[in-house]
Length: 271
Ligand code: DGL
Image 1 (cartoon, rainbow, N blue to C red):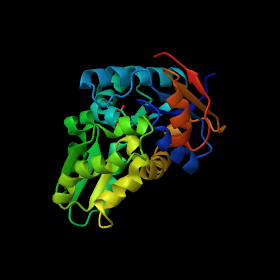
Image 2 (image 1 turned 135 degrees about the vertical axis):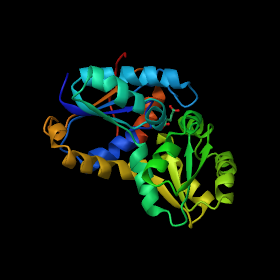
Image 3 (image 1 turned 120 degrees about the horizontal axis):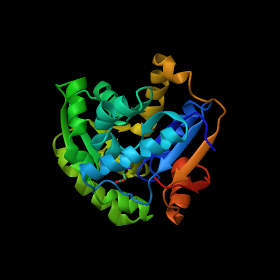
Image 4 (image 1 turned 90 degrees about the vertical axis):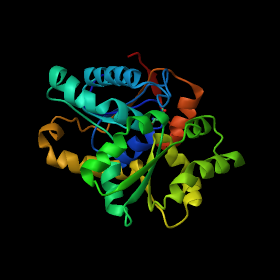
């Protein structure tokens, strides 16, 4: 069933946290969520693969009626978005748009930091791409950015081990180098880290502000739609939501519902 909508894409189900915030802020629109669960996680993959998979996701979502697609996935936003915007869309879909989650997080961090030292925690691929560093340079080159890849955190969330006491120790170890650099703002640069926010907050202490994309992106999208009426006009407004994934696993149903905040029914699709 096709309908004019906003697409939200993630490697798996973590992006449902972002979708939840977007639907709350902008309930009138139609949405299609796509999680590439058959090939997730993306965070340890090469840039080429992430680009190829993200392009297929874009093709699928546009074919299903999306006018605008949000990459809720930081790894796809870091490793594929710029090429998709600059090379792929102009050739194949000149009237459609794809946006990511990095710029909203960077803009928010720049307004929050007082000492101009910002930490970013993310997947290995996101850190390696240096996309966050590039975006900070564009928005405010004076801000010093300290990145830390946290490859164990996605598997911890996906295996339901958030409450395991070892998780606190792992988080503390990952964050220590950033705390030593005296950051006063920390970007949660991965869809899954929202579920670990309380533990991360405890580890960094009250003097560090946390930037959560799930809180920032909905407002930024709302402002974008106000500025871009040519896109906004084309969006369907029937409050329909479709959830699609490339593999239906128990964890997609279980953790997906946890991230989205209510039970979801998923359709299996192939890209
Ligand atoms: N969605 C990814 C991100 O935000 C995390 C999971 C993965 O590695 O695919 O970077």
